[in-house]
Length: 157
Image (cartoon, rainbow, N blue to C red; front, side, top):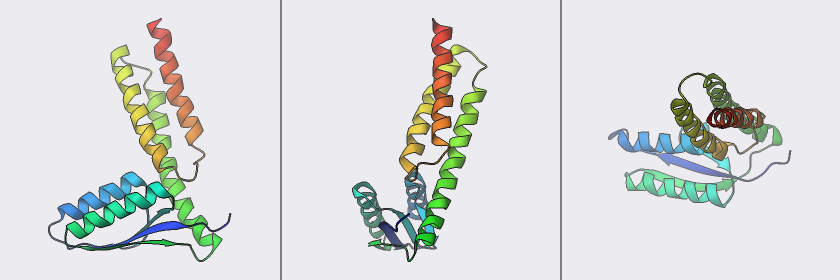
């Protein structure tokens, strides 16, 4: 694995009010950003992640904080693997949870199962957007959700 570019957001927000800190934390979680150290997060660099980090930097400054966006490279491939591994592990856990929910959705009314399928598909799309390194759990989870959909089709037929 060669060392690639990462987009970094260095930020500092006042402790009070806490609302901007919570909003930033939630946005970073939705993006799947890796916490490098306190006040420094990273994502693999592409146009989408760079734009999102710039948008977050603006929101930090709007909240009377300080923020800068950087493009950088880890010092070694091992450091990059460590960050990517942490990100892959977190996404993998989210995939496993979805797969378990899909497998457990065999009971209940068809209407409830259909709602569950819709929710699982939406959550799967959100997790896939955070899956920058193709976690091995992706394919089995997609298959589990697909099996649920096929089971519902058979019941409806």
